[in-house]
Length: 148
Image (cartoon, rainbow, N blue to C red; front, side, top):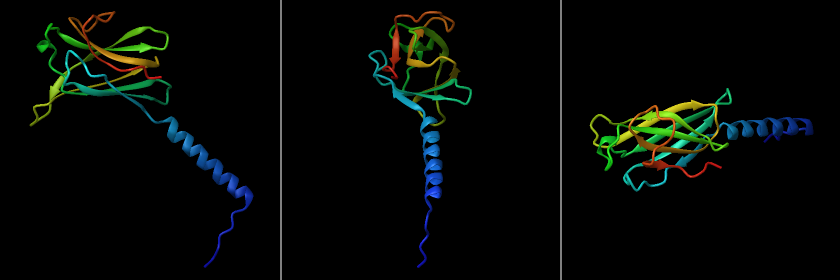
């Protein structure tokens, strides 16, 4: 049996490469936060994943199961709107999210993906009459805890 000897310089290079790879892998991981159970749509379950891209923007991906059609809410509205609260406390309308059914399934699902230059501290969804509203209404459907 032959024994391999690593010289001190080789050990340092190997250790440096290993640490660099570990840092790259950990920095590219996405942060995932679950939505808090809704009192308006209690069956809805979902999560938000936030990942920083190569341009230092934030890729925000939302996945929700059992999100009822917005017209079926107790106080019927026209659209669900996704909101971002940034670290400065500013709320931004990120767009409309729609629920849909997959082929051969009765479950309603909703998917949403966007890119933002603003770092989110919280993501929430409201029911609105118009997708282009500037401020969130009172009908809060889903919300995350703070990301940090």
